[in-house]
Length: 207
Image (cartoon, rainbow, N blue to C red):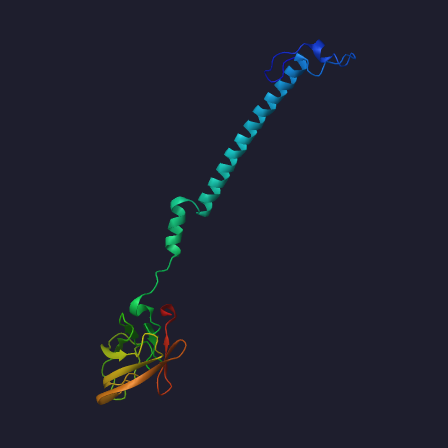
């Protein structure tokens, strides 16, 4: 008989046991049959393991591509997710834009120097608002506006108070003032609290 391309074995030899004849343990025929079986088992095992390894490689490769875990995909994902650390003045809690409840829609932003101990408030007001400074900036058409800047200073970069050097108009009400004066603003969780109780809320995307 022929089995998977192996040399033919005489039918008579295969039926020796059936006839009550036992081959010696170390007979050439018995050792040859045993060796042939081991060779076939080894060959089939190597083929199976090789195919399994290849399948695993294909599967893992597919998963890597699908999940974006391999090669340039992984580095690209990390670059997109990474957020640059704030440095210098931008790292200050004071840095950013604010909502002024007394002057809706009027820009209010605070810029801090690199050392964190000085800076400025930039504002945007409605022209011709009068002495009392009561106005808002919600109407944009047919209205003139002007920019203004006031200097600020802090005792340290981590200070919870800042001093505003007011000139021309005060920072909170935007009323006209004579000469120069100072006003202290205190950091209050998410904004600046002024002496009269007015609070500028820092815009969320600046926090």
